[in-house]
Amino acid sequence: MEECSMPVAIDNMRFFRAGPAALIARLCDVLKIAEIIDAVVDWDPVQCHLSPGTRIKALIINLLVERKALYHVERFYENQDLEVLFGAEQQVRPEDFNDDALGRALDKLFTNGQLKKLFSSIALTAAATHNVPIEGIHVDTTSISVHGAYEGEGDLDITFGFSKDHRPNLKQFLIGLTVNRDGLPILAQSLDGNSSDKSWYPQVIEELVQTFKPEKLKEVIFVADCALVTKDNLALLVQEKDNKPALQFISLLPENFGLNKEIKAEAFRTGFWQEIGKLSPKKDAACYKSQSFVREIDGRDYRLIVVHSTTLDKRKENSLLKKWAKQREVLEKAAKDLSRRPFACEADAKKALELFYQEYRHQPFILKGTVAEEIASSYARPGRPKKGEQPLNTVVYHAHIQIEEDREAMAHEKDLASTFVLITNLMDTNAYPDREVLKEYKEQNAVERQFRFLKQPVLLGPIFLKNKNRVEAMSFVFQVALLVAAYLEYRVRKSLEQEGSSLILPGKRKSTNPTARALLEMFDYLLVVKQGSDRALINYHGPEVIRALELAGFGKEIYLFPPRGTG
Image (tube, rainbow, N blue to C red; front, side):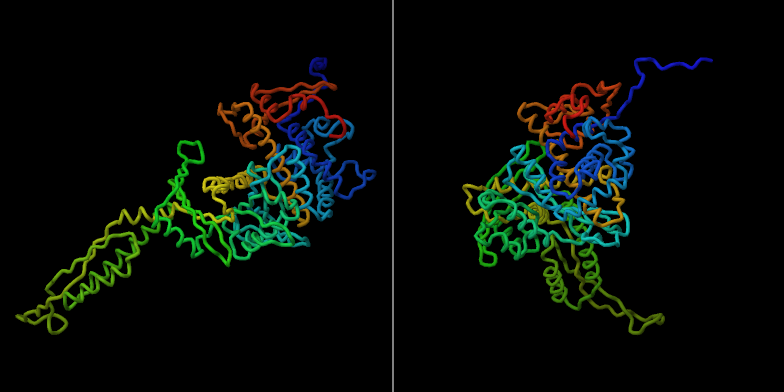
């Protein structure tokens, strides 16, 4: 039987599951990531087939396309069009991205010893390229849980600490991130697993002072959560040091500050609320109102803004309900115990009621007490009474308490729980009215949104690296991958804003603010067919995918033609 020959049309064809790989590769090139790394990291172009920057670029592509950890990167690139991703001149092969090669690249990256500066150099170059405003600076940390012992040498202390993953059984390290209002990373660093935000914030402030010129710092507003507000940190923020300007800031006054309760009580007592309204166009968005006060802390004046929201945080609401239920349970037990106690006279029973009211006066319940006169019968001797023996009757008094919810008091507690206090040194209420200060603080979700993306299990996964230094270098790669994803999101959103249009996501969902994750998923099923030097793009999801590519500043040609130069 003759062997059937393959049809000419598909002879020597290769199929690549391209996904967003080419898009990520071109974004890396626009952001000059490999170029900046290669200029800083010590390497020998004669000895190295590929530069460290190229291998780090390969890791970033793998993280954002395959969304898996280090292992199997070589296998991933067996199904990618390497010429399109890295250029035809380098003659890149899948084995160039095996574990050993990538490990050596991470070693070179760490040996540089300046990962923080390297990241800020990449981030600030990206910001300058895109003319990104850097006025509102938002900072926070998140924990990265890892599997393994990590007991060897290394500067990063991978250990147990407070887990924001709610995984106290795992060791961890932290990533500290500084972003602008659009969520674009500006600074980032890896931190020991037991670091606290309170101790990290002074490092960030110092890095900002070193990174930006004094005239630029005057435009910056530093926004952080309540962990920023310690006496030492406040002093650091507002002091004039080495002729460098104080840093403007906005934060949340911690609940454990005595001034917090005092200022809230004054706001409700005076009632001079200023209506702010909604900050979001959503139908169910909260409405806000505020009052501004000036108070002194350690000899310096600060502006305290009491903000009331019409929407109570669900966790706070559940906490209140649990507290009230517990308080009622305690009250009912105490009332039952009191009702069993006999009193010799009515006055003693009434006094017991007064003491009960006094002890539980701060709880949101109405207590209604009554005294009942009762006849108590008893015999002179214990045991079975003799035949014909008559009981002795005495009058005793019992205090009974009826418990009802105090709706007004509960409503006031909910009001207090729906209220928070902002602290800032932006004292000019005309230049910075309450609404603008609150709006800037609410942009804190920009950094939280990036953490949500970073924490996606399919992106991060366990870090299978035994060497602490490599873990720290890999953490840097995660940070840069996050930066790339953030700029993809930023470019598409800016284009949609300029067009005044929306993008149709899979599932026919319209969005004017698509997330990086949603955009990456749009490109998941792009295929490339290659025969010889010719390529064709197969797109199963219609024109919106190509439109998203164009909104990001590219076209389908990035999948069809290798970039000029080395890519």
